[in-house]
Image (cartoon, rainbow, N blue to C red):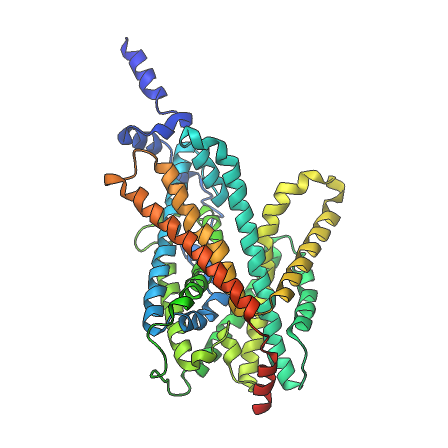
Length: 467
């Protein structure tokens, strides 16, 4: 065999369609190094490193951080702090796995960027032969889970907005309206905001929401520390039956897997996303620290009375407290458009070919209106914020935030790049088992809570009269 034939045969072994074998890590590295996806990103209009950090922080600092005191209620002071740090590390590590796998896949496919669903699809498409037939299903599963996640989170938003307005208006005007009435009223502005289809038109809403959130945090911190904190009556470790609610709530609060790939893909210098300190590590360290502080001191301040959002624990009838509740409700309302944009963009891209292009506008209006009304119906059926948050976190974020990244990395590295004694395979199996356990136990406990929990309106009315 000639030298030329030998080189051609050697090169053919490492084509894109056959790299699943990965029998030679050195040769694979040489192939990947031939293409730098980062050099083909948008270097002019792309997002700066500081801008990417701001996006990640904004995506994580919302209703989730306000639910952290409730999470500590279900764990206890010591276990809550340890659990928050552990879940924060797991979420960060799983995001790191996903981004690293996506970047490696880009090098091998010679494309600048891949989204979350695209990464999962391509990993299966070019992975072990027996799994290639599941590539399309994998993409549909991730896309479907993302849509379900954001639609479910939108339901949480509606419940939060309605509950905040109910607590203020019922108290100040001495009304006794059910929260479902406020859910119906909340749908009116949501129907208008949900029709916005361009991200640039959502920027003013996001800007106002950020201002409202900052003011609300300041007021909340004032009420948290304006009186002596009592530690004695707070358990260090809560009952074991409450732990699934803790983990589900923390995962919901901390997991921002849906925005990670869009942020990374839009960066001018995506090499700054991972690494130390890196955008991801900086954002998550900040988020975990804030969540731990708010959760710890919020639980100490309000104890067993803590609710699904700490703003709902602020004094009834106090002007400053009412302002915080209303501002946070408005902030979430203004963020609803962005929350609603992401799943609709995915859904419309999948079904728009079924409609006559001439009818695309009216089709989108009807589609968005129908989804918002359905979301309102779900919110009205489950108007209790606390178990609703836990349910969403247990089902959707356990799958997307932990299970899918672990499975995707395993398939990508299979069979010869799983580390010494296949430790990465063992690690990912453990992560998948943990995610399934969190899903099953968290969902079961949350559903039981939803079924058994009585509406707290009479209690709220009594508190109003006491003020």
